[in-house]
Amino acid sequence: MLKVWVGLLGLTLAEIMLAYVQLAQGLMLTLLMVFSIAKAAMIMAYFMHLKFDKPALSWMLVPPLIACIVVLAVALLPDSLRALELRP
Amino acid sequence: MAQAATQDNALLNVGHKKLGMWLFLVSDSLTFASLLIAYSYLRIANDWPRPFEFSPAIIFSSVMTLVLLSSSLTMVLGVAAAHVGDRTRAAKHIFLTALGGIVFVVLHLTEWSHLIEQGVTPFSNPWGAPLFGGTFFLITGLHMTHVVIGIVYLGIIGIGFRRGRFDSEDVEVAGLYWHFVDLVWMFVFPLLYLLSVAPRT
View 1 (cartoon, helix red, strand yellow):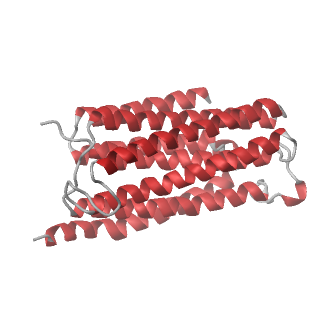
View 2 (cartoon, chains in turn green, orange):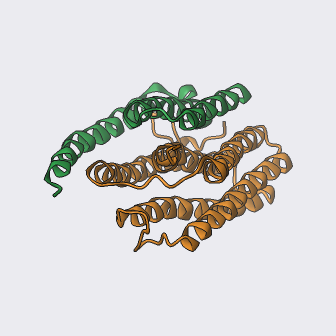
């Protein structure tokens, strides 16, 4: 568990370094999301114990959650690019 | 792990309290996901200020992040102690976790006061898009509310567990809530703070 915490710390420091070196926003957003999802997976698997519980619990909770978030993002975010075009 | 056999869900092998908390956390995740997606929409479609200097703003919020991560570690240790029946050690770690939460809230309110001094409020923003303040205070405010609720929740569980009124499953369920609060911050911190670092000229 301590190793998990050290890993989370490392990923957090990596994210902060990305902000420090001032990458382009698009690249930085992608990398930040990858790191954050990795951190979320580690917290859910180890700290929240999902890895050691019955797999049925993970299957019940995680795929629907991901599906809902993906549908939200796909349904709404592309329209923001249209809204960007509409600005005077 | 002590489980009331008649109350376990047979398919998932999980107590009803733990299952209930997990279902709540999934729904709460969608609340935060919706807010963050709405924020992303606004940010893409508008001129968005990037006001946070690396020092002090990002350093400050990084310390907040580390405090919350460490509080998750003390929570894990507390749950482990609870499972082996060490009530004193478990309570100690639960209170340490709550203390981490209190430190986080104090730091966060300090940061808020700095921003408000500069004119950023939920209703105004001196640097461009008026919704910068609105989205910032809404998302961080909702998260902070969850932290405060967690601090109270942990206090009750810590005192009650030490007195023998709660069992280790109750401690574990409180732990799930606290890790969720940390998890949400793992997304709020990059999306609201790190992506708003002031460009070096």
